[in-house]
Length: 92
Image 1 (tube, rainbow, N blue to C red):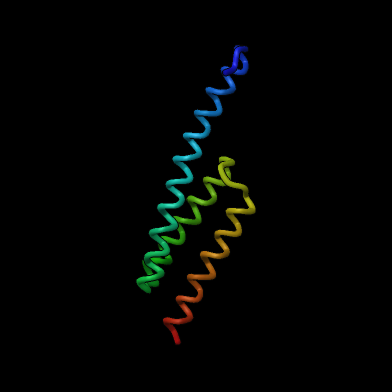
Image 2 (tube, one colour):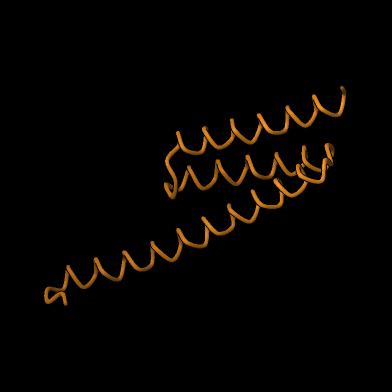
């Protein structure tokens, strides 16, 4: 257990940040799951709209520092790749 005042404050700050990051990560996962469900159901229009929301959430979470910017970019690219594959399958 920490004894100094600064160490106790650091513990409080870490706990607050951990909870905040947990909320952001959970919200991000929920958005991605909604998007993947639409992809699985082959709903192109709805998936396109949800993809925009996922992009926004990824950018916000990365801007706050919860995930790294490159991680957000990589996830966006992978999600877009799935969307493009769905669109190609619909037209074919």
